[in-house]
Image 1 (cartoon, rainbow, N blue to C red):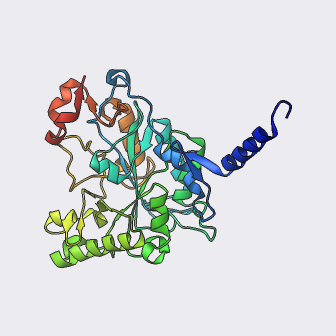
Image 2 (image 1 turned 45 degrees about the vertical axis):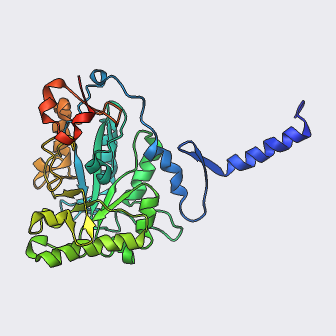
Image 3 (image 1 turned 120 degrees about the vertical axis):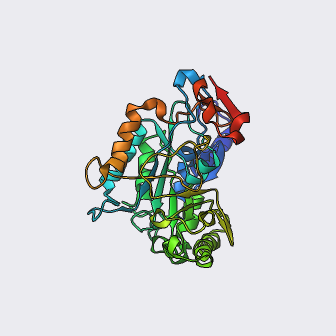
Length: 344
């Protein structure tokens, strides 16, 4: 290179080699790995900082609005029940969510009120029950098996910059066909996903005595923590949407303490910042097309209703430290959030 000294040329070469094997994640160098963790390069899609906060009125912010919590079970080529969706169905629903301004957040963040999405967008919680291998499995190369829900989400994120591949997986004793979740649970947590409790045996907790109900929840909690020492499960999806007796055992018992219990559900959830939010009874919406059994309670119909009543949706102001909403709704704010309110 004309005009470049040998010393400078050597420095440029070293810098090139360093950057060739390094990805910048959240502003920090992130070396590519050969242990099946290359998906970590997608971290900016999950954790990129939202755009600067907007004037709430400019984006019609309403952080007291309703939030869809979508429920999935199997993602399979041939459906056998209303709980199944095809890979094409799933991709189409992701397309719709992204097109309509929804940004995924985990169940843990939602129930804790850590809702950090760009101004003018709407949070959505994607949840998967039962730990079915169609949701997630790792191939021999350590990467998600193509066609599984996780692989579809990661692939979708490549072409949709606003979309975050974030979801919560509610597992039982043998998650994803992986004994003890030894491979799968650590991978999910390391790659920005959330893992929650669905009881050890998918038990009907109402039929169990208090000791058995606590064991069903506590032993599954312990399994998650054994699989991944960094795990800190904070939510449960109640099998069949049925509480134990007393109901409070869903959130706190021998060996566990949670901040939210999700139902099978049929409607959007209240904002966690409202007095109506009940952490013991968080509704979900089954992912479903506009037709079929009980389709009026499914995701296609509910997303239509939320689109038609846009002001009823949770719309972010882009600032997670404040809660913006129209002044007329002040009475809806839960008392513990009064010091964060920003009515306009």
